[in-house]
Image (cartoon, rainbow, N blue to C red; front, side, top):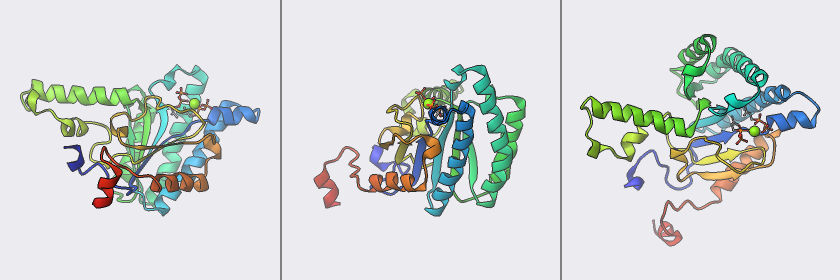
Length: 249
Ligand code: IPE
Ligand code: IPE
Ligand code: MG
């Protein structure tokens, strides 16, 4: 029964927020600046929102930094985004560590350069023992990729005789997804006005609450973040039940 799964939050406890940080390019264009200036400004917003999550004692923040489809952008923009990722991994990791934040990177990391992979390993090792906020950065991440790689791992176990096909259930699939072991996202925020998932987390968004804002990511701030959280708390999460049933509990 899905309701018995402890990773699925009951009621309106807010443990995990995930964000599609969109609108950097348009923010820069409006200012007659190159798109990259928007990505740089977006990184300062990340700092503010991470600090707000720490202040609010949130357990997990998952942010979409680069999708598996973003490789389709002009080579120059992809190159600059990779440079920004490398700089952020070097400079921000120390600050994350000072704030007891555990950094995790989710996505297919094989596509990154050796340089970036070394920086990722270093940043992960530095913050691995921290027990404050868990910050998942989705990089070369795709929700479909995640389900596909989980399926491969499960199939391998079947092939090796460690698992029977009839024993595959939702919990086993979840145990092989990138966000395994974490509470599922309760609140999904997308800035920049688009109302789509763009291949972000798919499996765990099944019962997540959505919040869309036209504000472009570089303009997003703690105040708007708190408004999104207030909107979340004002909702009734029914998980398939009726409103009356919830009142009886
Ligand atoms: C989000 O902002 C950042 C990444 C996808 C890396 P965009 O770059 O998509 O900004 P817009 O949507 O073009 O304004
Ligand atoms: C989603 O934004 C990916 C990230 C924010 C990293 P996009 O700007 O790539 O999404 P689409 O292409 O508009 O759907
Ligand atoms: Mg965009």
